[in-house]
Structure formats: structure tokens, C-alpha cells
Length: 226
Image (cartoon, rainbow, N blue to C red):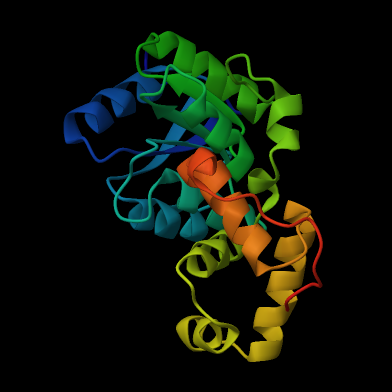
């Protein structure tokens, strides 16, 4: 294909990959396809974020393990931006976990590195046209797991709770007021369908660390601790 013969409606794309060889190869694939106009490349999540906020593009193709923020955090940050690109994660992860986490974070598509570059190009074009493109995932399962409904702040607070932090300590750690801590905890408890800190901590270990068999049974009653 002739890179000089781009169509008038070429899809503007930005790429991010910490592997310089992979980034160069991806750049060539996209640059040679007349459906796309390659606007920016980056080797870090921060570099990608800076580029797409400065020059908005339709689609961003990123590696899941980008330094320093990582792909998951990058997608969550982009989701809050008005002019953010739709994101395709191009990464290792032929299993279900990475595609599922990418979808939960707000990505619009996933393509495993084991697939052909042509498939990545087609997925990117489909995402630019408004489609969600993922390997088979049971969306009902995704929605049933309340961990995927938590914001980044709520997940961080839950981890801190599991470390035994008090409300006062949380307020200091996150530079927020105790009332704001209570607000976040109320939302956290509601999303997890728990009544107090002890039950939230039990949920953390059963769902995140996978040690539910080692934990004592938590009481179902008790007042909300906010």
C-alpha cells in the first residue's frame, strides 16, 4: 500500500508500546494502511496521555503493560476526558483476565499479540466505527462482580482498609477530609453490598486475594461503619 494515498476520512490513530521494535513495526503497519493516519507514538503511558490530550485522535492502540501508569490506569484517566480516544488494547493475554479488565476499565477493544497485525488493523477500524470488539466474555459475569463497579479511588480505599487504616489515617493518606472519607466508604459499602468495615475487608480477601477459605465467617448484621 502507498502511504501517500490516504483517504480523506482516514482514521487518526495514536500508538503506545514500551518495546521500541514493536512500536516501530506497528507504526509501519498503520502508516501503510490507507484507512489510517498515524498521528503520534509513545513509549510510556504518560507520553501517550500527553500526546492525545494535545492532539485528539479517534483511536489509541496501547500495550497493557505500559510504564509507568500501566494500561489499566491510563484507560481510566482517559475515560474522564471529554476528547479521549477510544482505546484498543494490543497485548499478551489470550486468557480472559486481561480482556475482562480492559473492558471494565473502559477500553473499546482487545487484540492479542498472537493474532495477525491485519486483525489488529481491522479491530481498530471497527472500534473507530463505534463497535466494541473483544474475545468472548461473559458480560453477565463482569457485571455481577462488584469489584468492577468500583472507581480507582474506591479500590485504593478498599486496599487501605484491608491494611487496617482508620478513617483519620485514610484522610491523611489521601489528603481529603474525614467527611470525604466517609462519603467514599458509604459508596464502597453500598457497591459491595456490605454493612461495615469488617465485611468489606472480608470481601477484599475473598475477591482480590482469593483467600476466602482462610477467613472466619463474617457476621451478616451490624451497623454501617462510616
